[in-house]
Length: 208
Image 1 (cartoon, rainbow, N blue to C red):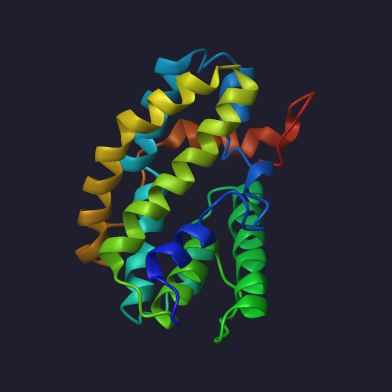
Image 2 (image 1 turned 120 degrees about the vertical axis):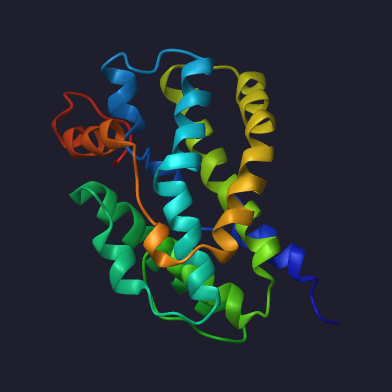
């Protein structure tokens, strides 16, 4: 009996899927250490910025174009604004591809994380309209978990943030589904700088 594609996708994007996502903070650790983000409201605003103007939106466009058959692997790698962010997306993508190749009836080549997810989803015949919002929610959920550990926040605060951002995940996913590559860009410059400064933090929990 074939597996429901929605169940397969949820398993790929769940914390149990071995991509090592729990060890990366996307520069959030620097922003918290420097006092830029200090509470749940600040975390929610930062995550909303990533979705509207930052890497989350860009990655969703890369994923969507990959699912349409475009080769954006080199572009995805080049868009990383710092060494640690490059390592973050490439190592997660490589781990994702290895697990897909070990568990699915098809294989994909290693690439940046959104490209690897897009390749697997295309090979599995999934619809972009299903993949994109769940991908964005998974990315945001992982960063919420990082914020819970670092600020710190309670689990209920984390769920409130995730619930508040779910409509935005859907909206950005719908935009990304048809957005061309020339709409990729970011206005989250402080986050990009924070990711570059992370390696100089005196004490670190996360790898980015």
